Image 1 (tube, rainbow, N blue to C red):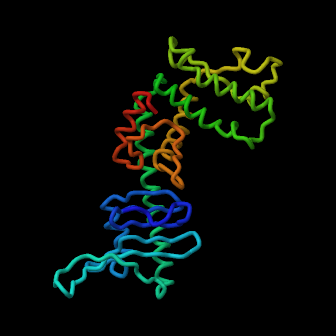
Image 2: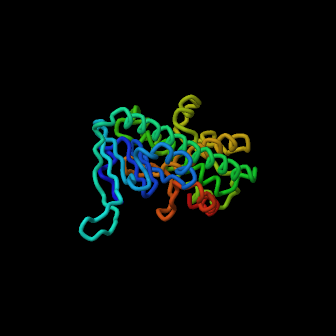
Image 3: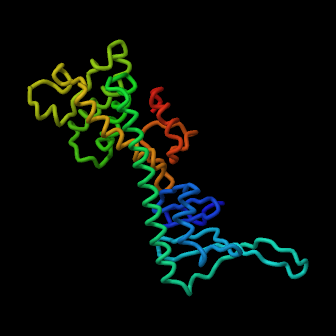
Length: 276
């Protein structure tokens, strides 16, 4: 069933048929067990009962609310019963609506955090399976460093023209790693130092013109990178969109529904294949 309004207009949206909840533009499909144990007690019996079922609840950003329900009614002419959709008048229930909204948001937040924590633990376990830095991990670190420096390319980034040019050069060196160093071992891949670290070095050499401006990743440094990458992947994979816009800054194929923790194996398989 389609949403009543766009995420830009709504604060909270609940679809009881699809078991989806959207809060501040972030949509989550709730699994059956969590819906039954945590969401149904909030809705039943005032808002959702055996003969008068909740379809949709929407709280708009201007604090107005709307609820659609469906009622099992008897057709007086034919005597047949059927479900009839109608808009429920919420005006007599301001306190109850406020309480319901607060409790739904609390449960949505709990569910989202649980999803992302589970995903983070599983990703951490995956990276811990081997202490060897391989090319899949090199590419993942490269992608992460590119994402981590995206801000430097924004029009209002607090950089001078010269600083921005160095960031462009830094990002190009990262992009060129697979092409320029494909024949060497992953442990020997040279990563460019960032422009601020080059400035602190103050060796009098032009940026990225000396071998001292590059570094390899020993295991101790890789461990720090893997922690940051796991945190990033958990956030990016656990949240698919905000206000309808994709927030995943890494390449995840569109056919992967990344909001579901149950598909972690598929995500990890894509990591192993170097597709993320």
